[in-house]
Length: 386
Image 1 (cartoon, one colour):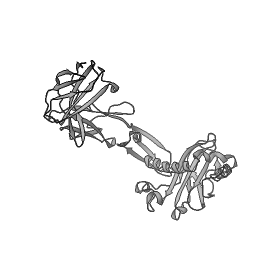
Image 2 (image 1 turned 120 degrees about the horizontal axis):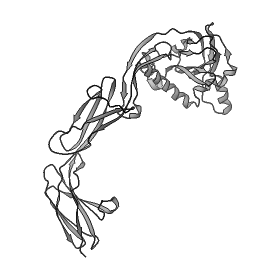
Image 3 (image 1 turned 90 degrees about the horizontal axis):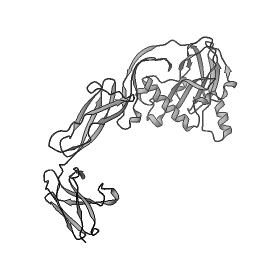
Image 4 (image 1 turned 30 degrees about the horizontal axis):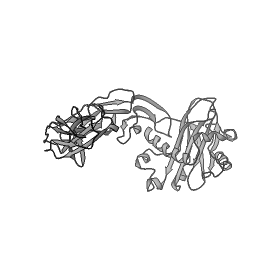
């Protein structure tokens, strides 16, 4: 229920932000609102259609149409605001209600009803999942004695709404929930805490008692992300941490599956969450070919010739790298590709004369159009001839 209501409110807030007002706009006319008594007779609300204002004057007038009554409870407790929702049978659009604390213009709780063909594609209320929770503008909240509150209504349907509202003491219908912490594989910023809690299922009531929290996943890391091929399966350990820094337990909170983790190329680790968590994520690591080493680098006129040990198993070719920097900085370094794994020498010319160069070599293998390279060999130095 908690996440369903959160999703509903997200849709409403998206719509309201496009119309350039927010929840605290309800409080703009508290001074002018009709004062009512809680527990009294039903009262009528006529809510015109909210349209995007073209001028500041229109915006100010619109604000007056969003706020309808105010009240001061004599007793602290839960109160509910029950609307006549007959308009839902014919209306297309969205309607939102909110209970607002007058003193600081804070929205205490909100209710929402939506039927938008442009999003749902049919007459369902934004998909079956939300429909199952009987999405409604009815709202219940805990109010404190002696404080002033207000009730507002935003009408974004096609026509004016006239509805009656009954205000009365609220009786909870409590239910225990156990919601898993969701892990989003696309973007971890969408990960959500899970929790075990008790909540009221009537009128979007804000009663909520948390018994346990399953903190959202913050990081999933592999112990190693690069291996050298040796014809054996590679299984890097996985460490999963939540937003509090706690380490989740393999087998209890998640299981790990390895794919294509023996051959040269990119291997995939799939982490499937379980227990108090749901969803999955993937991490990858590389398996690179075995490297080689330089046997000799011979000086030439304005150049050199490099020789290395052949590495014909699981390689496509070699790369020679030479630099005037011992650290092989990017600006001072060039790379030459040698195609064919049976070659074991390469002459490099048109260099500066009488200049010291650092030279190293590595192997590569092309898999599905992508080069996978070994580590670089130890460098040898050579000084070109004049």
